Length: 127
Image 1: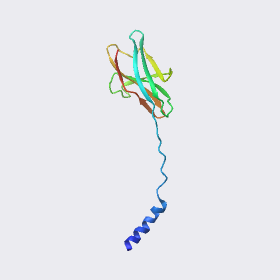
Image 2: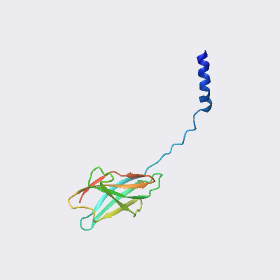
Image 3: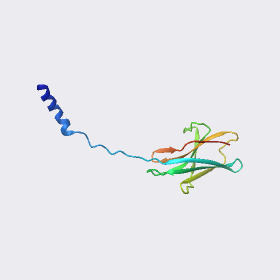
């Protein structure tokens, strides 16, 4: 009986204080991108094409492409090619001097939002 009384006295502060109100959960809907195709030739240069298939709920600050000779496509082994010609949720960028003839390249569209980059699936092409 004495143990039960001690238990009740010690548990009273927990009952009255309780837990803090739960913090609201922030739901982020990321933009969705699609790397569409690469057009052009070695004489005139290549045009990279992509689409924003869903805007999400974060403002897109910048968009373009990440291109690399490595299949892993990690920052440090490739380059960003920025785009500023978005129309009807599609965008493109032209490259003329980056590519080396006979090399295989990996490319994916990206969008920069507040503190993240969002990437599309990779596309492989050969120069």
